[in-house]
Amino acid sequence: MLPALTMGDPAGIGPELTIDAWKHLREHDEGFVWIGDPRLIAGIPVQVVAGPEEAGSVFAQALPVMPVHLPAKVTPGQPDPALASGVIESIERATALALEGRVSAVVTNPISKAVLKAAGFGFPGHTEFLASLCGVPGEEIMMLASPRLRVVPVTVHVSLREALDTLTARRIVQVGKTLAEALRRDFGLEAPRIAVAGLNPHAGEGGVMGVEERTMIEPAIAALRDAGIDASGPYPPDTLFTDIARPLYDAALCMYHDQALIPLKTLDMANGVNVTLGLPIVRTSPDHGTAFSIAGTGTADPASLLAALRMARDLGARRATVRGTGS
Ligand SMILES: NC(=O)c1ccc[n+]([C@@H]2O[C@H](COP(=O)([O-])OP(=O)(O)OC[C@H]3O[C@@H](n4cnc5c(N)ncnc54)[C@H](O)[C@@H]3O)[C@@H](O)[C@H]2O)c1
Ligand SMILES: N[C@H](C(=O)O)[C@H](O)COP(=O)(O)O
Image 1 (cartoon, protein in one colour):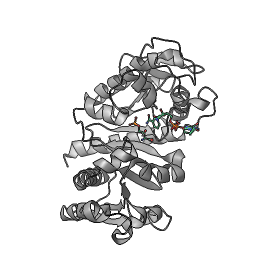
Image 2 (image 1 turned 45 degrees about the vertical axis):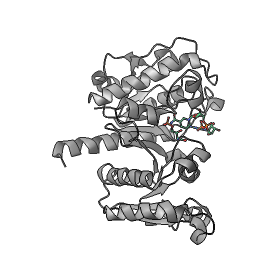
Image 3 (image 1 turned 90 degrees about the vertical axis):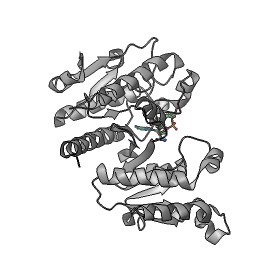
Image 4 (image 1 turned 120 degrees about the vertical axis):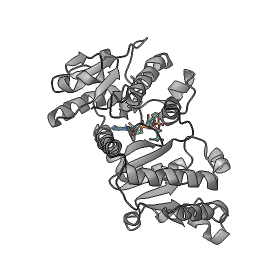
């Protein structure tokens, strides 16, 4: 069974990355079905298919496409909220196929949060939208994973002010438990080690630079350990991602979006993958966005999309094995 790849913002780099991914994967006996507007694809053969079941036999000769009709002209690098209906339809159809068990995973090309918001879209982005489509709103966890680092922010697509206002011990524990389960089930780690970052400089320096470590993070770590999870910290964030520290843990649990994503994207942008945990389906995404400034120039690097497709393949296969054994 193959994954479904969504269209993403058609004015972004998604279409050209899709072409690059097809060219690369067809040489490696792998594949995907693309749910997008065929008019976006040039320079390679395209085959419209009625369903993902046909994609495997087509992929070596042509890009298998389940068509989405865009209601307006697309100019690379010029996002248009009028195209939002097609962007959203692609995500909805891919997710429905995954929930029906007809594709192994959903891999999403980048969307623009601002453009969808301008079109009236009611979610911050894919992560929250997919949780709603899957019937598990609030359960979604965003992980960024690369061979060099895995990070999960407790608070995600909110302002830093709102992150500080909404960070709680309870939420840290909830995210930590979902992370530990995912590291065991999806990444095959029997005893995953979770390093918990402090919030404040020097992790509060014993309370002289902030009290959140003592009032919420340390109690959360204690609750995770009581639940049998190997959680430790809170660690000073500025040294948690060093070459010395990273080998000592399997994932870093961070307090807010950029505390997690700056080190991941700085260390390994090309191999980073966005994985949504807490869903009944496998969903991965490149760790970058629409890159409007280079869309259509032929300079976009497909590495992260290829990594996302590989991780979707691996996670999908592992989930199928777990289902098969019932373990
Ligand atoms: N999962 C997603 O859908 C996702 C992820 C991140 C950002 N976004 C969205 O993308 C839009 C643009 O966000 P941004 O500018 O902050 O981040 P971005 O990742 O789109 O671009 C940041 C910089 O990296 C470059 N870049 C990104 N991907 C590249 C690639 N594959 N090859 C070469 N260069 C690449 C861009 O040219 C730009 O200079 C925003 O609307 C944001 O919400 C979406
Ligand atoms: N926060 C992620 C990042 O910066 O790469 C990304 O924006 C997530 O967006 P989605 O929820 O649309 O995957």
